[in-house]
Each structure stands twice: as C-alpha cells, then as structure tokens.
Image 1 (spheres, one colour):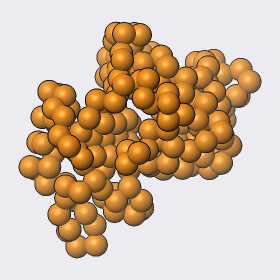
Image 2: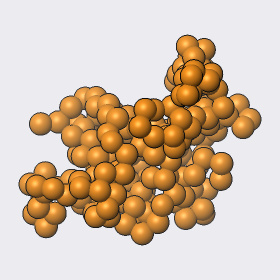
Image 3: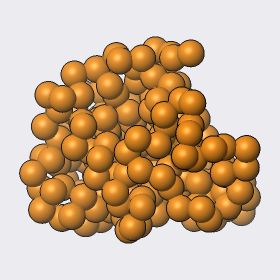
Length: 180
C-alpha cells in the first residue's frame, strides 16, 4: 500500500532493524538505493517511508543528525536519494529535544512530486530556537511558526535557512551536515 503522506519518528540507530527481513529478496524492494548497515537502522526507516509514498507522495522523518553525514552504506543511500531529487528539505533541530536521547535530530522532508526537476535542498538550522524546560529543550510556538513559515515560503535568512543547489551538495561529497 502507498500513501499521499507519511510522517515518522522512528527509534534512533536501531541495531536489530534486520530482524524478520530478507534483505536479498525484500518483497517491497525498499533497499534499491542501498542496504543500511547491520548495526544502524536509521536509513532502513527512511527507505521504508520513501517506498511507502505514492509517486506524488510527501513524507517527513525525524532522524539523528548522523544520517546527514555518515559514510559508507549510508553515504551511498543518501547520494542515491539526493540524485533522484527525493529530499526537498532538511530541518536541524535542537539537541536534547526528545526523551531517551540528548543528541540533536533533524527532520528530512521527502517529496516525490516533481523530484527529477528538483535543483536544490532547502536547509533550516532551527537548532538555536528553543527554551529550556526542566532537563529537556522544547520548541516554542514561535519557533515552530518560524520554521513552518520559512520552509513553506523558502525564505532565506542568514545563518538560519538557505536553498542549497544540488551542484554545491555534490561538490561537498553529498554531505548534508547543516553547519557545513
């Protein structure tokens, strides 16, 4: 079954993601862009969401920042999906936002519609817009509003948001690390 929209907040860096999956004969063909490493299932979730979208489908997946720059199998997958234009945007979130982990996360915004015509990826560094709430960080309503407004309107703000051409991403070896 495929969907118009999919949103996911999978567990970060799951080591047992291959349990019950025949990687050599996956009936859903989720790993056509590469197989995630055995000990890190972040891209397994992203590929599952991507495969679950219709040809005009849109998705958002919250993952650890490492998916933006880790090498080897993850670099191969990332390069393949960037070249196909499936990533429309990346939003970097503050550290210590989610329960169970203090590491910073990002939202990868997927969009299959007109993917082949996509010439860039819109980046937002929202890592500094938050309030301390006990031992966690929390996005305020104003922070969320700013992120949504900037993304929807592709507003470029120095040190906060920018449309990065695919050619520039290619020059950087398909490394999507936001500060870079």
